[in-house]
Image (cartoon, rainbow, N blue to C red; front, side, top):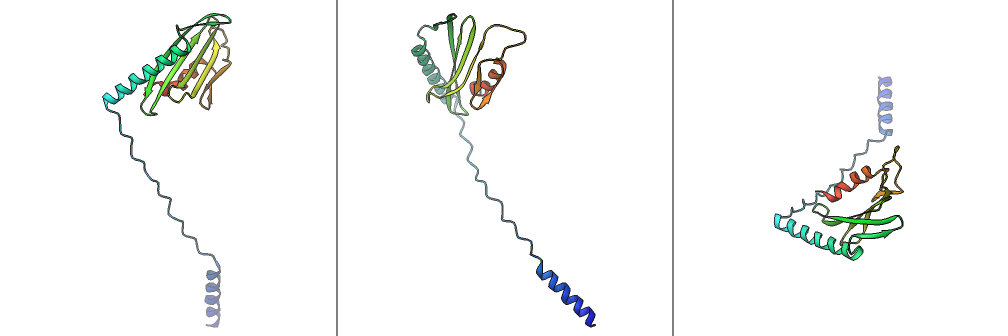
Length: 157
């Protein structure tokens, strides 16, 4: 009997020495932001028209007639604009092409921020030559095709 009492006492002492598993704190509450209210067709048309007007004005200030003199000859310039409703931003894509080079730049018209730029050759070479510059925000690219893929989310909804 003394032996079983000693065994029980020893087991109780061992159990008391082990730390109890700590209770995990509840996971933090994630506050959900309300979904953005989609634009009406009229609002979307209005923002798109404003974006096109601001882009056209920007283009005319920078390149009055769409022709620029470059070291390798005359360069033709063109632009495209797009109001991205998801990002609530007007984007302006400027393309300047000369006989030897192709330059593309993606801007936020209202903020004036440069989102991406590309500078490469217009010559079709085999194997293809990497562009001198190819970047959209923090992503770098190795070809005009990759640049177009990176720009697509800004210029489309």
